[in-house]
Amino acid sequence: MQQQEQIAPKLRFPEFQDKWQESKLGKEVTKVGSGVTPRGGSKVYKQDGIPLLRSQNVRGNRLDLTDVAYIDEDVHDSMSSSKVRPNDVLLNITGASIGRSCVVPDHLIDANVNQHVCIIRLKDSTEPRFLQTLLASHKGQKLIFQSQAGGGREGLNFENIKAFKIKFPKKIEEQQKIAAFFGVVDEKIAQLHKKKDLLEEYKKGCMQKLFSQELRFTDDNGKPFPDWQKKRLEEVVSDFIVPMRDKPKDLTGNIPWCRIEDFDGRELSRSKTNQGVSSQTVKAMNLKVFPRNTLLVSCSANLGKCAIVKSPLITNQTFIGLKPLEELLDIVFFYYAILVCARELNKLSSGTTIRYLSREEFEQFQFDFPSLNEQKKIADFLSAIDDKIALVAEELDKAKTFKKGLLQQMFV
Image 1 (tube, rainbow, N blue to C red):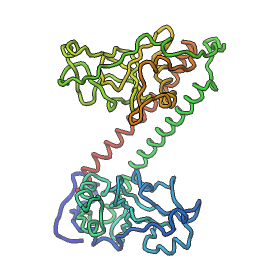
Image 2 (cartoon, helix red, strand yellow; image 1 turned 135 degrees about the vertical axis):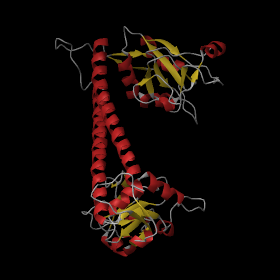
Image 3 (cartoon, rainbow, N blue to C red; image 1 turned 90 degrees about the horizontal axis):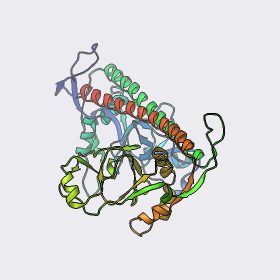
Image 4 (tube, rainbow, N blue to C red; image 1 turned 90 degrees about the vertical axis):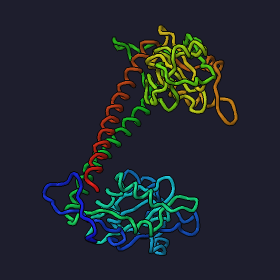
């Protein structure tokens, strides 16, 4: 590597003392290139055969083979320049996923890439997993986006990539140790992602079975609950709160002003951007304030998206507030019921460009309701799953933050 610059990261393994050095990536590679789309269009794609890797297969710092196109061996052989090898670094160079990267695993012997994925094949003196981790870091992503070519469409060309100035440890042993360390961190993140996905899939299955009545609870004495009854919302909701159309000009008050972007889970109590309305503005504009334990439901665009109001707040006209009769309808059960009914709500919506449900349509909307005690058992069961999902999501965020902090300190 070049001897132009001597530098070291803030955090490193103690057994390594040599300074890091800067080199253009082009000096550390034996190949930088991409593939092509096979001739013949969709006819060349098969149910099995040789994988043709596309940009969607490069995700989460790994090669994702769950949605792979396949080609015959003769097509594979005709695309010799796009063949990948184990330990190649793959980098997405166009489109929305530009900058995502991964390393080809050892078990993938035969595969090709299309023109949206670049193959970076390194010399033996550079560890591919170190380079991939560097490219995925904040510093690497900044380098990638600063190097994009113009011409009306963002993208990276091969000369841009070869010109990357990247700082490496002198010894490949240090590169390998850094790569192995982040490999463990990435594995933990992947496990948390999988755990969260499995819990969400489990919740989805349970909701389908509970609201189709395939799965029923019994009371505390083990006896069946009464049959569910079909009711209109106007029979179980005491108030349908429709907001005013006018948006306040002053959003510096203490009553939260919430939008669809503020919805994050089962409950809603604040604006993520800290926007709010004063009580004076509420009075002057006659704004509708949604009280606690109102179910706030999107009635336009994201129909069926909902949240339980946990402290008084105000929204724009894209929502309706449903205040349940507490002796007939449990608010948490109501939340899950509306989520399940989102498809039916969309079918009812009117309008051509923007879907919309009126207050009258909400009043007449009907579905099957269990008894209040069974509602509470369903609500408690699904809430417990959501609480587990939230805990895993918190662990996942902490792991990502931990990795981000280490990347900032272990790369220069």
